[in-house]
Image 1 (cartoon, one colour):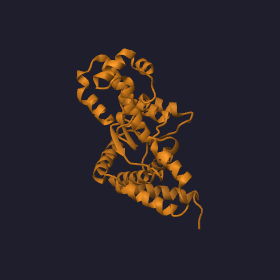
Image 2: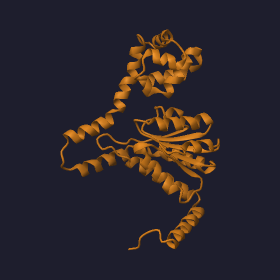
Image 3: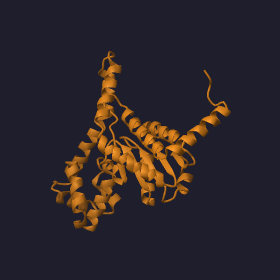
Image 4: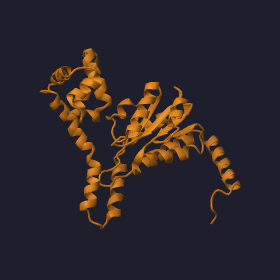
Length: 282
């Protein structure tokens, strides 16, 4: 039902009144928030009135705002079920065959990846990264591990890669010196952190291209991104394996796009690490 509502917004946007457009614009970018907002809070955020919100809801075929809101609340219940399943599995699960079950789950998630679509998306991402002045990589909490991995690997053979870290005192300075030809690559899975959403929105409002890897295209982050690469992160086995596989594919594509330059930088890096005895010897 939620998908039908959003499709209606998309197909009929130009026909809507100015007030209704304000409501639609807010809902499209804050779908999770709508699940919890009272009619007065939504009216305040959209600069309209409770009466306008009611008329808006009825124009969509609902009896009123509460019934309209239920559409987003039900979707939120589905989205939060992943960690709920994970928690229940720990509480009720058996200790036997845990490794085999998790491996099986990861294989199933990998097999669900739309290879043709993601392959094309990665090719597009490569072109945007190549043409960008600087690449900012963003990920918070659980997604930080994926963001750091991409940053760590990519900076070994490409200049101009920045990692945005939640809580870092200098992240505002990085935003200050960002320019319009910079690119943001956001990695985030539900529940999305405020930091991730706010930084992504900042880049989008500034006119930057945004690539997002997430679990749902129709989400607060997906709706403000220019390119959305979707992958599930599991239910019973909460996992980032599909995400790391896709990031590895992106790294290989970037490296092979300029094979000679990549090999030259990697050889130089090896010479530097050997010279300064960075790694322990066997």
